Image (cartoon, rainbow, N blue to C red; front, side, top):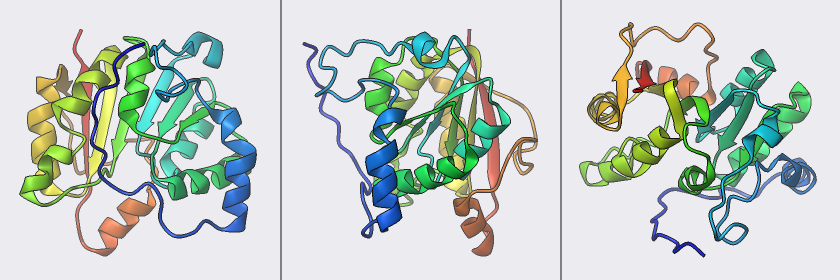
Length: 229
């Protein structure tokens, strides 16, 4: 058995009471969408997931913190030849995604309803071709910046899971988050791709968080990196 590391978790795991339909999606659909044994209770040895069995040898992408799932569903529908894993600890967001997934008919998605760090433990090294971090929790107070995803605690295991040359996309409407992203991500083994960060990616779809940012007159930023070889 591998010793379980101590990991503080910040943020919400559940909000207001789920609608009856969302409760049904959770009970009927979620278990079948598991990528495999991720939790420490299921997998105390931290054995790696069998992604070839899961996705038939296809490229695998990851979205960390998919919110309500708009972007995750969009990518799954537009890229049926790719396997995509979404990680999201906020159960209300997971339930929303499941409703969208039923409507979309996509079959190339797997869901981890928990901390992405636990998923990083069991993803094989150099197994991901692309990763997305879209409108993550900004933790605006300076004393909370260490809670942001763009810190070594998260970026180093993510880098281990990405193939050389893999793409890592970050979208945020918080200027200081852009600053920290541009400082910390290259230190973890990435190279920034030179493009206009005010212009969305060609295959982008607007999420509820981006819509909120625009309503509140905050400018979106789209930053791209590649994993060093």
